[in-house]
Length: 320
Length: 291
Image 1 (cartoon, each protein chain N blue to C red):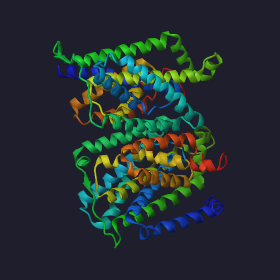
Image 2: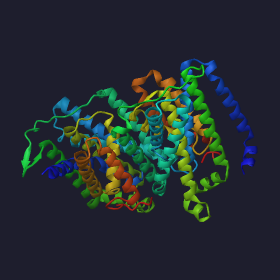
Image 3: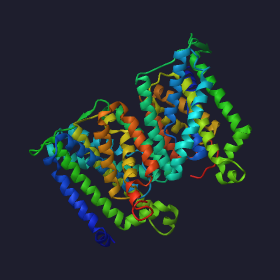
Image 4: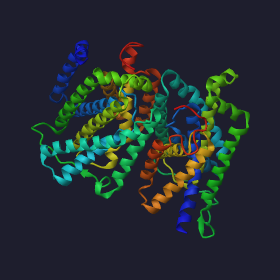
């Protein structure tokens, strides 16, 4: 199944490889500010792709994915700074694995009860989970959420710091994209699509819906944590309010919606457009920034309800 | 005595929570739309009442009808012009994003017009506290609670006993059947949204005399409405009242027993638990909408 998909999608794959190669050249060509914008696009793309594993493919819209950004960042930070006392790249790898493992375990623990809720109730429950974790992290002193955690510095191999994090994010995004491709075009992707369209029918036809949902939820949480941990290192110092942010959760949805939900190219297109618009174009008008972000959201839902990809393939393949 | 005082404080606060959430609950019950701009409408109400008080010295409780009229108009136009379009063209899920966009816009406008600072309204009757059997009541809070209960009662009466109320309930139960009976469903949705916005505005006017407010508080009031609705059940004033009172008691009791920084964590933990154990809320789903 996967082999046929690779053959059918070969032009897209070629385009992706070219895009990846072009992206790798960015830190050598562009100015530091532009590299930072690129960093943000990669972060947003990766988060949106991680979200879409569950939200786009299975139709379970999480409104609280920032829980895993925050949890992953704090787990990694506390391990690296508090216990290992910062041992450079080995510490980073240890923190990365630990943060991912913690998020995967927490996701596994909440998956069974929470994934029984559907639609809006799942969305609200995830919002609640994110709020509980954020409040606990902020108010339990041992977790250092209100005081903050200083993330250890990493050796930069002669790169500028923004270049380093750019490459880290690029690698993570590429891996996430690969995983998302395999999921979408593999057997599990077919099962998820059936589940999204009609869960009861899919289950009746023998799709192991419960297992698929839980696997995707855990994978989505762990991948979100990867980006959370890299983001935390790029910030250098984190508090609960800087990593548990409700706008992260909402942006993951917005990028997907803008690009085209349930597709692979959608999150890439959506986050690139949204980041350029909000950071570069609106960056100069800070006092009305929120107003125009809101206006953009409203216009987006009304004018392109199936995202930009949906505009091209009206009623055809791709989106939905 | 401390326990009784805590419960009394919680109940007084809970009345306000209930009023602030009842509109949210109504829209959710009737249309299935989750209105993330509900808290922003509460804030608009609070700032309107503040403006009337500053400009003309009108008491915020007397300004409630004015605020309600303004917000009713806004709500009606908002639903017919924006929400209905989003529901038609896309899905209920993405109409939620439209309301989030509107919340951002309203918050930004409030910041630009009124500054991001905290505001509060202090009417003339903010006098000495009343002591009843050892329990202390702040007259302002008692006035706020009374006003909230009166408004909730009025809404319950309208929904239960009047023609408009019957039409709203019928449309909520089954849109198609209501339309076959000659109901203009879109007009009813507009009306419902208007009523919801009006009650949000009224609660804003009342909360101004009890709690200081600023534009970013809108997010908190939306989340409160969520919790109240999941606790009490969707679509009915009685559910909102029960949920609001419970939320008030829970948050005062948590800050008393566990610590002043934990009410929010407790609130959301209960929200998640409720969703898992009894998603229809304690009083069940008033309009029996499928989910």
